[in-house]
Length: 290
Image 1 (cartoon, rainbow, N blue to C red):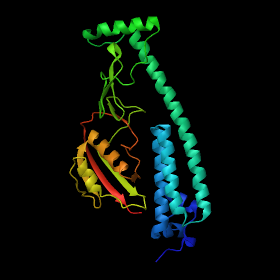
Image 2: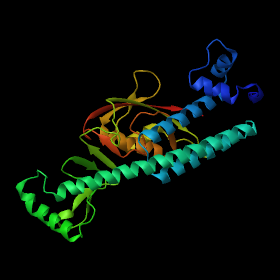
Image 3: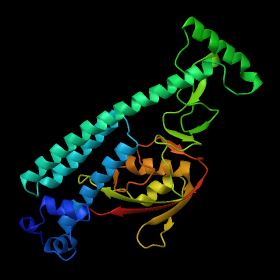
């Protein structure tokens, strides 16, 4: 029987429930725990909060942020037809504020990255690099280019201190050539721009496309040449792989139409990770029914 949404918890009560500020003994808390519609709204609000946190800690490109916001608004518009019109207005204003703030964060991050590249170029031009003697000729060529004002910007990633996977290609020519990648990048050092993947990762996914049936998670895992097993913790599956394999699997699940509710790395939009791509990882994956 369809639930009476007029008796459901208010936006403020669900927000307090998600933030852990609602007392378990109050009537609103008990209602949300027993109401499927309210639990779904709380889960989506929690997923939106996690997406904001992930965007600020490791900001993706502005186009990715815009697409994420549009997808979130479309999904919310489908559900809002069953609720009061005021909820739609609240989420629209919140999504607009998030998009503006995240866009500013991306701009600041890009300025910082370009500053690092400029310092690296000056370091190379001064002849302070400690590469092997076989590279001495290349360094001299770069120094001459600096004096003539014709040296191009250096490659963002260097094969001397990092390892990249997927779509490896050569950028530049002659002494300025280097290996770059548009997809997955692993570096030895940890930092704000390099996401850390834990030895055990737990992800929860949700299918929001009402016009199509959700694909089987097992088939997506098998397509990535991985073998799923039943998770010892109960519902869900367990996969043993490495960091590179996990990143590819997460992107494949997201590309099939699932939305990630968890905030732990790797996120589908992340592309730069700390450590080695061969480090072992145990992945626990589960799905949430809408």
